[in-house]
Structures are given as C-alpha cells and as structure tokens.
Length: 322
Image: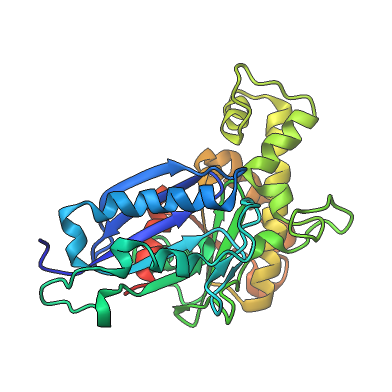
C-alpha cells in the first residue's frame, strides 16, 4: 500500500471517460479510458463511469484513496452536484455527485492506514467542469505554473475553459466561470445545442472544424472524418482544410481577446485534441490575436501549449481534492 494518500480521478467528456489514481505529485497510476456512449441514455453513460470506478477500486492501491475528484463536460452545478453536458444529451441535471458517492467502493471505502476517511468510510466527492479541472491541472503541474491570471482552454469535442485569477483557480459559485465555449462570437451564427447561437464551440471545436470542412467540399482519403483527418489534409496543403482551421483559430482569438480585455490575463494555455494539430492551429491563432487583442494591456498575450496532454483532466480532477 502507498505510504501517502492517493486521489481517485474521473474525467468525463463527450468522446471518452477516463479514470486514474493520482498521487500528491500529480503522477497517474492504473489509468484507463473508455468510450463515452454519448448518444445513448443517461443510465448507459453512468454505467461507464461505474465501470471505471469498478476497475480502479479493484486495485491494491484503492485503500489509500482519500477522495474522488470528477471533471465533467458542462455546464455543471456545484450546489446541486449535477451536470448537464451539452454533448451528452442523456444527462440533463444529472445527479452525478450523488451517483458516484453511492458507488459501493466509494460509499463503503476502507480506512487507509494513517489517512482516516470521513465518518462511515464514505469518500468525499468533488466536482468541477472539465475546463476548470484542466486549469487546476495546468496551474498545479503544467504550462500555467506561476501565472497569477491565466485562461486555460480545452479545445476538443467541445470547447471548455477555466480561469486562474489572483493566483487561484476560480470556478465561480456554480462552477462554470470561464465557460468560454458558450460565449457568442458570431451574432448571426448557427443555433447551438446550448440554446444560444454563434457560440465559440460551434466554430472552434474539433466537431465544428470537421463539419465546416465537409460543408466546404473537403473529402478525406479514408473513412475518418474527424478534425484529426482534417489536420492531416491541412498539413498536406489542402486549402479547404487549412481554411477550416483558420476559421476556428479566428473564433478562438476573438474569445480569448474578449476574456483578456475583461479580466486582464497574464497567460493563455491551450490544450485538448485540436491543439495537437500544432502550428496548424497556433500560427493562425497568433495572427488573429494580433488583430483582436488590440488594447495596449492585452497585446502580446503569452499563449502556450498545454503541457499535460490528455492527462490534464485527470490531474485536474485530483487537484480538486488536494
């Protein structure tokens, strides 16, 4: 058994549900990833969460776990312990904290030697939006270390974000502060599943990049029609694929510049699957930021690539428990 406490971390997104045990230095043990049945019922999605917890609790290290942290696609409601991920329609006001707390391995956790658990053996469960979890991770162990005021974005199936202000992660009362994916950047844009229109997520997410490329005539070499395939075509010089990434970068630049103008940022950190496209995203982003970040105090924003990769959500979920 480890001599120091561990945190159980669960990262829930529209594409995958991941889990791991994380130590006090942010190192992962027993990590696993399972696909999210996003188009199925809420019960089916919960079953995958339970499967992740089943596998983690089956390890010898489970006895040293002192809390469970959850980073979920949002919106989230910290007061009610519920989630309503835009990309998981089966979860609307879903009582995720209560459901995880009721899992047998969480509700009846053994007392780890030297690390007493709450009365009755139940582990505390902490919830945050995935963008807030990513911000917590990058501020703890990644590219936002040392930044007093930072915006951390996850650009993937959707677009999530979290804010670091005055040296601390600030989720806000509901847990959704910094939810950049659902600010309007196109006044006459398409309707968004969130109920608004012209949202940043509808222009800059991986889903949006692929959708726009297909609508403009891009045709993949194989059956893969994801943003990853669009990136491969863009790297080969396909003008339609390049234009789709450019539009996504322009939307991101508008959202980042607006946030920087509002809260006076030191740094911007960008991660998620779309960020793995590298300069296909970051080069046009820098160009468009020169245009949109025009005020003197936000010019020359320090934009960095996230350092923790696909582990950021899990490390951030653990950071919630520290």
